[in-house]
Length: 237
Image (cartoon, rainbow, N blue to C red; front, side, top):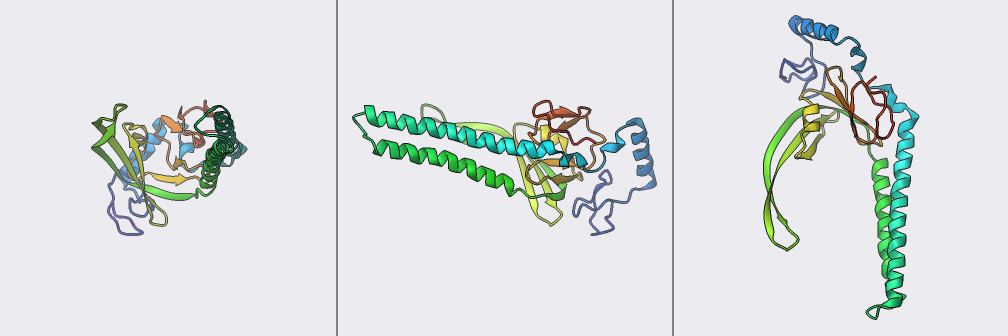
């Protein structure tokens, strides 16, 4: 099917141009098939479009809690390390305080720095709209080392989904030995990457029976109202 905006030729089964994301003009036959499918799935028409539920306060609360827990966890690790090195410096003949304490403070500070950088990284996540332009399945191998220091060959399957953003940037999403997300998206799907969350939402969810939570990425039933894990609203309405 030829795109009226950029002239690219896309598969007739897709509804958005795989080059620029522009909605494609359907033939009479495809429109009839689409109308029939909508009638057969009555109640799903409200699952076409990006959900306004992303503005629910629960998502902002989830982001704040995630930030708080990352610092709490890092703080606990930092205290354990600092106290451990201090005790080691007091009881060991190999290292004395304050040298041991300084090492503990350095490692503890590293944990807190990692938490800070992770928070800054989440805050810098930007929103973009795009389209799925390709999907790949690759059989790969890599060398790993076991607990005895011996190398062995590991075989795995790499699933790749390729997105093209509205600004023309190509983004690849990888998963190893898990085809759930790979099967969830199809070439031609229009998507939105949400700011501050780093999760993807489909524009057309009318044919789906599953949905990923846009807060914690947990897989849910499409008919559920909230994520069973974090209680954030699912973007299915």
